Length: 106
Image (spheres, rainbow, N blue to C red):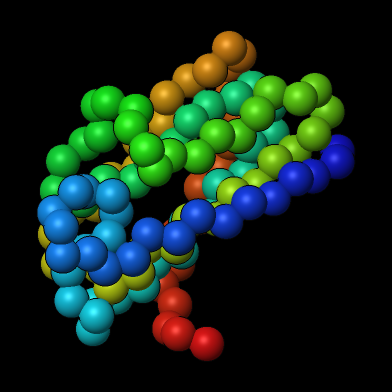
């Protein structure tokens, strides 16, 4: 398999726009690693509600045959509560893994 890679960052915001950014600058940081082996899908993080509408900012892992794609989502300064990662299928069924880990500023 070949590979392509992208990183999305979602940080603390004060505008309540549910972009995955979450409040205070002292919260927990979370890294989500997505590994897509086949198919394609869009992905979108959200705070306190399941994302049911695909609105920016969102990411896409494509359907190029024989190419494993990776994406990394950094959710910074998370508040306490429920956090979601929505996946919307594309033109082909997907096989994927998601790995979540906390991190600190480097």
